[in-house]
Image 1 (cartoon, rainbow, N blue to C red):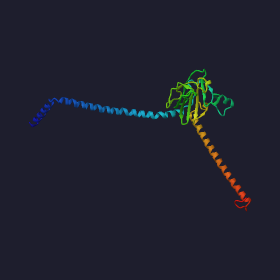
Image 2 (cartoon, helix red, strand yellow):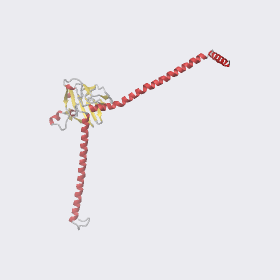
Image 3 (cartoon, rainbow, N blue to C red):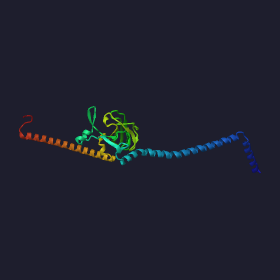
Image 4 (cartoon, helix red, strand yellow):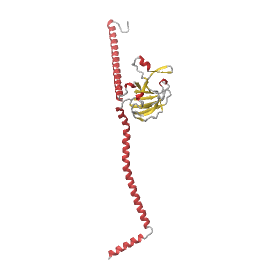
Amino acid sequence: MREEENKRSSQSKVKSIMKKRWFLPAVYIFSAAVLLTGILVYQASDNEFTQDPSENKQNITSENNEPSIEVNNSLETFTIPMSEAESAVIKKEFYDVDGDTKQQEASLVVYNNTYQPNTGIDYAMKDGKGFDVTASMSGKVKSVQEDALLGNLVVVEHDKGIETHYSSIKDIKVKEGDNLKQGETFAKGGTSAINEEAGTHVHFEVRKDNVAVNPLEYLDKPISSLKAEKKEADTKAKDSADQEKEETTENQDDAGNETSEDSNENQESDPNQEPGNE
């Protein structure tokens, strides 16, 4: 009996609470709060799941961007910097200090009644028409200069101390810091005040430690050939310097020995001579 009375009492209390005006609004508010909390928790967990892979992917991509250029360089060979290389002609060759007189005369650039050795190769089209200038090898744009004398200049760095220079160009499409792929068009052939007789052309240089080398010697060769020559030249220079240093030391020793011998001979020639008397 008591249990039934307790049940009836509790049921009547519940009914009385449900009849209150605030009951239904409170239920609605509580339900909405639970639902909103669930949505926020789900979105937060979903964002964490989707963001991490993309961030990792972005980091991997950015970390791999720079090394890819170096890898490409090791596989590439220097090419003629023109989109239609098969139709290219050389307007003026590189001045070779070891070349014959005729070749050297043909490689001089005349400007303001002065003769200057050509530090690169001047390429043009057979028909003299315009053409696209392309990257001889993949690399990063080191500088872009507007220069009326040279006809503008773009310097591309391929490795430490190894660069290609492109001048007598126009309609330049790159800026400092841009990456260039081999064969990518970045300008058009132009003219320059220093070599007007060449007409529309591109002046192409290959430089090693800012010293111009003959581009023709490295066409169709990898950048490693230029590195190897640089290492060999450095070794020869070091050996030459060491040899010169040794010869200088030997000469100094010989001079010292001769002086000592002369002094001894003078003393032996007059053993009774007092110091300071002649």
